[in-house]
Length: 162
Image 1 (cartoon, rainbow, N blue to C red):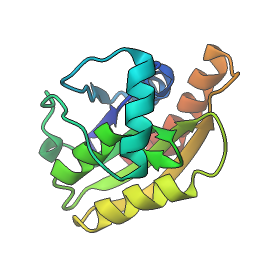
Image 2: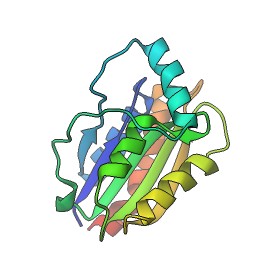
Image 3: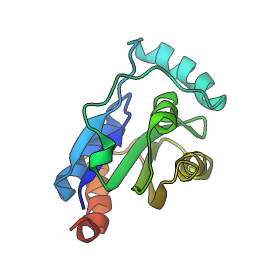
Image 4: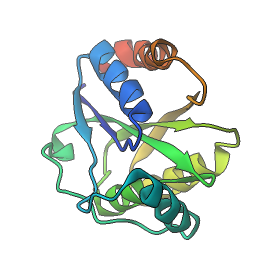
């Protein structure tokens, strides 16, 4: 089963997890990027407001065609208990028919259920099958520990991929 790891990462922590999953699985990665670069403080504030409202943001086209993959990992930080605007846009634009999806979220706090449920509902409404979800606490955690969590997630799906 061909796998792809797609993620949005503002500070690089979600990227650490996504790349660790991909390396463990031998999967390709695709980083979602917004078209407008803003300073990190402004992005955090405006992004949090957009996240609360369930809004999206303008993102660049992906290089990978998700139609070529059967197993897709989607990762995002949690902002105000919700997925990021960039992930909202990606999910709203993607065709998940006949795709198995694993969600992973990174966060500073707790209470991941709302973000995961919002993404799961949106993906299932587009005929995708969410087969798993994971949360990784990244605040105050060393880079090596974050990577280790990504490897653990990848190992859980390594046999399913083959």
